[in-house]
Image (tube, rainbow, N blue to C red; front, top):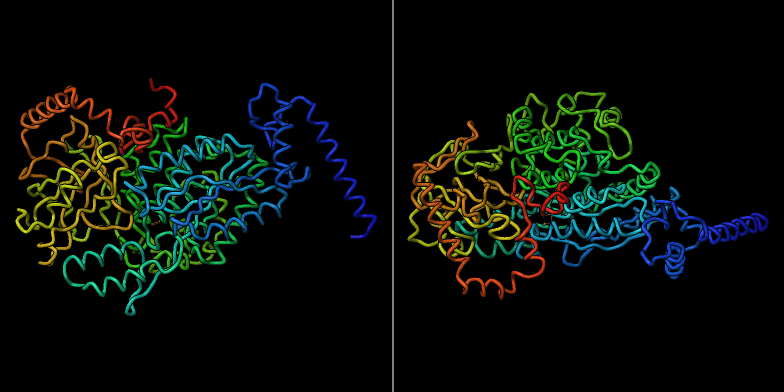
Length: 619
Ligand code: FES
């Protein structure tokens, strides 16, 4: 730069700075940049003055501070390997923001990793959503990029972002690469579970399982199969929130960094357009997301998350129900051959074209007028798909004429055992005969009871028994743990049994498979729950074709059991000893107390009642 140009530029900066200082005295009406959401000191001009004093301590110039402010939520944690690439992603995001005239500012929220959260990561999802919502609302941001990845983080951020209703752009960390052991590919976490089941059955020894432990997660990133993290990434893209390639690019790839840069660039234009999530989302966006969920054989957890997400939207709350999932499922085949329903890994999906190819395949059943975050409709995005000019065929992304499963990958069951619904991933059943099955119940009161008795050689159980686990619903075991994949009793596993009909009010990892009925509602902790009064030997009927799950016990007998249980529960509640014990239980204070008091049932998203869009109406 010539010296005269430099002087000109420098003068501009000084002039700009003076103007901005004079602005301190002008009426504060702006809802953008540093002037939005001022701290309350009773003097708005002083609030702005003070804000500028402190932000300048970080070395920002007036020029930088005059740009659109793009927040970047940093959820890096040394206890979250699924988020290990976040520092690199932040650098790339900043590049995208700055190249397009914005100012990137990162800030932290809590981070949740699946296997490092007790009692379960789901227990913390609503806390993270509150953290996300409040920090987006509280700070002067024109748009915010929310970096997440591990199972509960993306739904938490979407829930918080929709409630905050500022322009938000999710960016996922991306899936890990598959590993390899003795010439066979491996990936967390479907193969963690299948190999552990083999170890329990005695077909793998301790040396083998220890060696496998080193290879199942060979890089950072989210689980490398169609588990909850990958499902939520695909669903988020289908909702229109991110570039389609952003759902599947591996965590350690250069493509992932380019998507981060693109997200940074998009954030500046989304900030300028003030495009909020509540404005962008429509009923059709959710129809598309559910279509994708069915076509990918996605995680059952996504049903709970999507219900929580839609119920944060004031105009869409109540528009999507469990029935919507079932209705769409009847028309949509499973097209993706990925574990746990199929055989492959997320990297294979990405290499086969990922969401761009899948959505192009699904085009006839999608709602193409749905809006995306950049302002294009989904149809316009797909018009630029490289897959539009040739007939796409792949073993990983199947055509409608050659699906992996004909339809209804995820089904919603109802009956006297689940009057408010239950969910099953039928496509992940290992023994399809169990999709129509009746057998005697073997009941476990809770996960402790399960752990104590499941491998008892004297347990009265056969391969035709129905394993029932109570007490793991949203209230019963706060966080609704992923214990729905009840292990096959060791004595049956050793005899070669690999699948049984299993029922619970809890959840299951998206990476798991089997004939498993989940999210039974009302959960057994509720005194009127039928699941709560199932006894050993009761006959349970499951008929997926009829979408039925029932308890073959005389209705009068069921009512009598419920009445007896209610008397028992209120007697316990009324005893002063019980009251004292309750008050002194340290586990019942703080967030846990809030959780137990306010969590709603699975079919509503297991959100807190006061966080839903109707929350303000709750007495
Ligand atoms: Fe984080 Fe699977 S443990 S995505």
